[in-house]
Image (tube, rainbow, N blue to C red; front, side, top):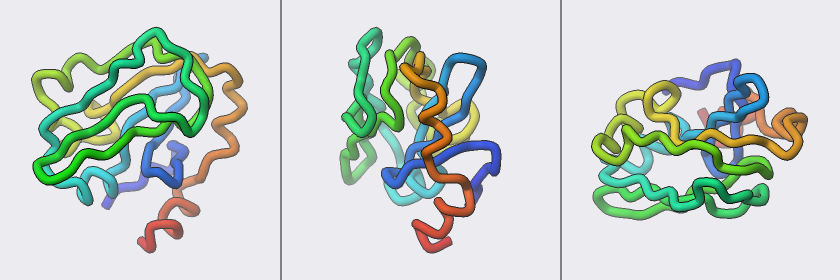
Length: 126
């Protein structure tokens, strides 16, 4: 299982990468492996400001649907359109091509309050 050190993580299994003044968000390798084969990613919050810990979308796998939780407060400025036709990319490359949304953070410093890779591994027992 992969836990890139440069990312931040949430207890709800999202990862966060800061790119300038934008935050890229997806689900962790652990989350995608627990869900199984992902068949649909639903994000209908584009151009909306979502509060931290609120639902910004959902992921549907063969046997379950799981909500996606916003790690920090901000406006959803982009959705990974590739996931509409190829949601399985999240299984294949969760930290790369499988990213889900980009967010303009209300306060980029909030990212520092998230879990680092070591704390996330401890959380999931890895």
